[in-house]
Image 1 (cartoon, helix red, strand yellow):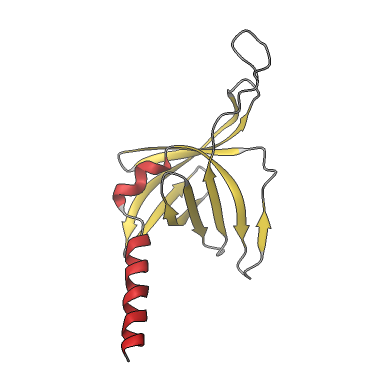
Image 2 (tube, rainbow, N blue to C red):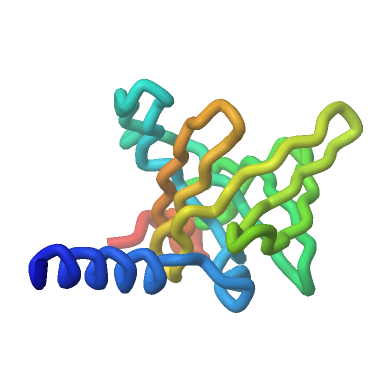
Length: 146
């Protein structure tokens, strides 16, 4: 009985400690690279060679996501398509409610901190992101960096 109570308490603490809160939304800001996608059937698709990032901007409950491609000089190319969202808490779940001219959809934020982001969409696909940084292989004088 003690083991069962201990296991339940441990599970409860883990669940409570890993929940995303409204105060965590600021971590969305910046560049994120998809590491893997976990499909609805549990299969994992690796994206280690992914050459594009998702750029998130978040401010006061709203923001946008945009695809960008890092360049060798530390800048980014973009497709100029922004998916706007509202970040909300609903039934203890952190949600991104997206809206474009063509569609509306939600993604649940399962994990969010300064280095990791995991979102789940309506098709039960889990997107696992890692924090990304600009690539700068060329210095200001146009020379390759060491």
